[in-house]
Length: 179
Length: 296
Image (tube, one colour):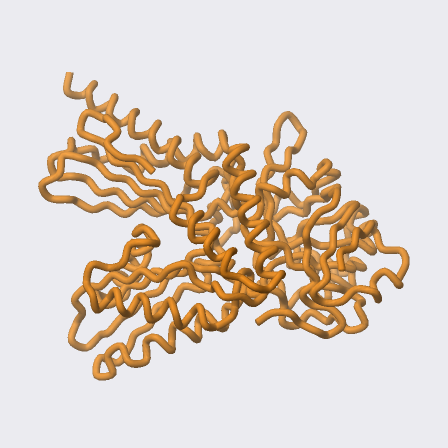
């Protein structure tokens, strides 16, 4: 099955219809977050600090394990290339981060060991590693960026995407497609 | 007069390096392209085919639009082989740093140099002991040969050093390699390319493993026994059914290249360096007058 999905997810029935092996294309705003962004989100929680407003609004959307190449020119940002990074490095932190932000999809490569996909509260989508250049075509614009002090590839980029995919559902409902 | 000639040669090398970094990050070598096309033909599962289709589309898009094929433009490894009859230039570090800074801005590249204690990223891909430069002297040559290998983080993280028991020799070695590849599954962006160094010491075997990746995929080791070992390992890895991105399939590895060196009687070191399918490599050979003899 191939599904075009609009973000944020407002109807839980969309989630419950998803199963492993299906293809998905995403539309709407997604965020990038890798090692350092995950660490900082959990530090905020630990210190009882209020998360940035932009992160509170990402409820129902997708988190992309990606450290993109972004060109900064006169205060504007241009998306150059951005395929997925290895998801397992975020393994220990992901369930907490997802709960805090209300994330519905994790996009990455290689899958995760401890991601809790039971009842499709969250679904893992695999995007083909190394395929960064062609993502350019799927990015409408960069909506926002926070935590640039972490470095450009570790910052959280808010990307407006159009038909981002093909993403394969590789982990859903407690099931796993990885060999 | 002499001084001026040197400056000109140095500038020539710097400009060539910029060109090479553009090529290495926005192109894919023909042997890799051929291997990926062949792998696509050999898949029967739709999932694996889709992966190879997207990989080929992305290669095409990146090459055509001069966009980095993968956002992880990697650690740029510089292998420099200087002919002993080539003019003596001692500031390779300076020339390379200048070229890397320029290329980072032009292409652009991702800032991949991070301070290990402070996590500070200067976003220019240079810094303390970075990028890695490996110098060799080649006797009897008047030329300078440079290879640039872009190594992404996902695959490099799977690399390993084994210190084997000399009395067992290579007996346990294939199984050890298979275990590492199996556990890594989709993490290093399979189908991978494997560089292996046998012998030397801990540092030498790792360096040999990395240098083994410079050899084209369709070229076996000239020693028949080593060539057989390469073949055996390749077939074993491809029987694991890890497939592209760990989603299952007939091709998990595009090639195994092994290099060897003499070892200490008490040590049997084996190094393995894992490379992703996006095996980005560029080479050039120039004469002492700065003319290009070969480039790829």
